[in-house]
Length: 135
Length: 135
Image (cartoon, rainbow over all chains, first blue to last red; front, side):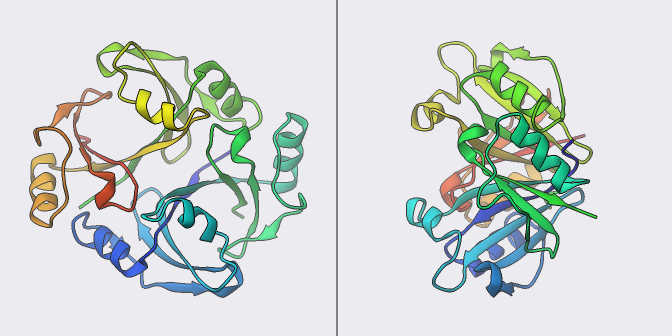
């Protein structure tokens, strides 16, 4: 069911410093910061040949990554995003097999403008998983 | 400098249960477990179209992931592995830019039989980074 690894999201307290690490010592192709106020984050894309890393910093008062950064002040890997062909079919399969979908269970429009859902990290070895209908 | 994301490593307390999650609810292509006693882990490869997830469980008394699982008993994302063309050139660039390489600084033979180094997570926003000379 799951297809490509769309991205690895890393929450960071200082986006400019984190982008400089990936552009400098790691020598990656790094985008300009992009504010996504409706998602409560500012993102920098680290473009790799086969996938991307998304560096996320909180934006606004209700950022979904604020709690994570309170627990991990230096930052850390926040979630993995896998592509699926049909997000409703994916959700139904996951729920039928006992996995918990966060929120209402209805897909929301994610940061890429595509339907997404998040799965409960307690059901997946402490890993927060996003699924995105990529087409 | 960094190239492809070679893999995302997830430490898990129960490898069979974790493999069943990726094969079942997530419907991925999952390998048989492979014991790597010289690396202190047993690994299951979750093969995605563009990269792979490596599920790691401790093997033996001195597993390098034992401490992580003591702190995160349910498991969690352990490290990211990026490919580089020349591991010594990569190391020298990283060190020159102030990043710390773990251990002696000399590459070791990693789980894929290729030279690897690990970078200090405190220098990369709480993310443990492995670099692997992929060819």
